[in-house]
Amino acid sequence: MRLNAAFGVVTELRLGLVGGLWPTILAVWHIPSLLFQPLEISRIFMSHVWDLYGNSVDEAGRGVKKGLITPHAYGVVLDLGAGHGHTVNYLDHSRVTKYVAVEPNVHMHAALRRTASAAGYSEDAGTLLVLPCGAENISTILSYLPAPHPPVDTLISVLTICSIPSPQSTISALITEVLKPGGQMLFYEHVLSERKDVAWWQRFWTPLWGIFFDGCRLDRPSHKWIEDAGGWVQGEGGIWGKEEETEEHLFWHRVGRLVKT
Ligand SMILES: C[S@@+](CC[C@H](N)C(=O)[O-])C[C@H]1O[C@@H](n2cnc3c(N)ncnc32)[C@H](O)[C@@H]1O
Ligand SMILES: *[C@@H]1O[C@H](CO)[C@@H](O)[C@H](O)[C@H]1NC(C)=O
Image (cartoon, rainbow, N blue to C red; front, side, top):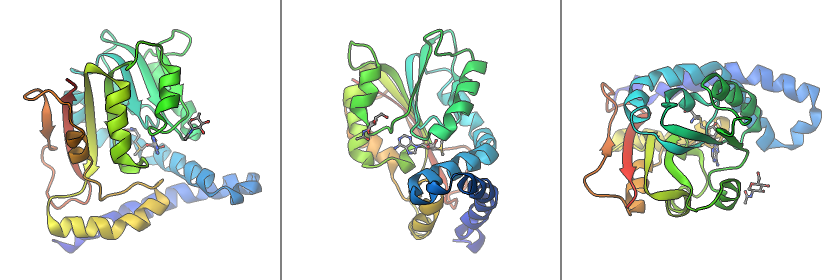
C-alpha cells in the first residue's frame, strides 16, 4: 500500500483538530463545569467539526445518495445519526410522509431543524420528529412512533454505523422491531477494507481517530453485519461500491438497499 494512502487520515485528523478545537476550548471557557463531562466536550467538538466539514462530506456522497435515497425512500423514514440533516435534502417530498431524525448529539439539533424545515419538513406540520437518543435506544425510538409496530418504511444510515454501540445487536433490533415487513434499509457507510494491508492501517488508526471523532471506527464490516442480520428478500436491491473509489482508501465505502421479508 502506498504510504500517502496509509497516512491519508493524518490530514483529516489535523484539519478536524484545527477546526474543532478552538470553538470547543471557548465553550469550556464559558462553562468550566464541562471539564467534568468528557462526553459532552466530545459532542461539542464533533458538532463544530461537522459545521466545517459536513457539507463537503455530503458533496462527496451526493452521487451515491441521489441514486440510493431519492428514488427509493418512501413513507415514514427513520434516519440514524441524522447529524445536520443532510439526508433530508435527498427525500422526495411527494413520497415521504414523515422524516424521523435520530440524533443523540443535541448540539446538532438546531442545524438539523433548519435543514429539515428548508426541505419542507416541520414538527408543526407533523412531518418531522427529532429524537435525542442513540440508535441503540430502541424502546425510546418506538415510544415516539405511533402503532402499529414496527412503524418505519425506510431505515436510512449514512456514515453512522461506524459510531453506534453494540452495532450487531443494534442493527438486528432495528430491523426486527423498528422496520416494517416489506420496508427497506438504505445505507452508505465507510467500512473495513477487504484488502489486508488497508485493513491493517484502518485498525491502526481507529483508536486515535475514535478519540477525536465521537468513537467513529474505521474497522467495522458494517455492510456484512447488515446483510447477515438476515430476513432480506433475495434478489431485490443489493450491496455495491462507490464509483471511481480506489481500493486503497482508508474510507472505503459500501452502499446498500435491502428489503425486509
Ligand atoms: C459522520 S456523522 C453523519 C451524519 C449524517 N448521517 C450525514 O450523513 O450527514 C455521524 C452521526 O452519528 C451520530 N451518532 C453518534 N453516536 C450515535 C448513536 N449511538 N446513535 C445514533 N447516532 C449516533 C453523530 O452524532 C453524528 O451526527
Ligand atoms: C434512551 O433515551 C432517553 C431519551 O433521550 C434517555 O433518557 C435514556 O437514558 C436512554 N436510555 C439508554 C439506555 O440509553
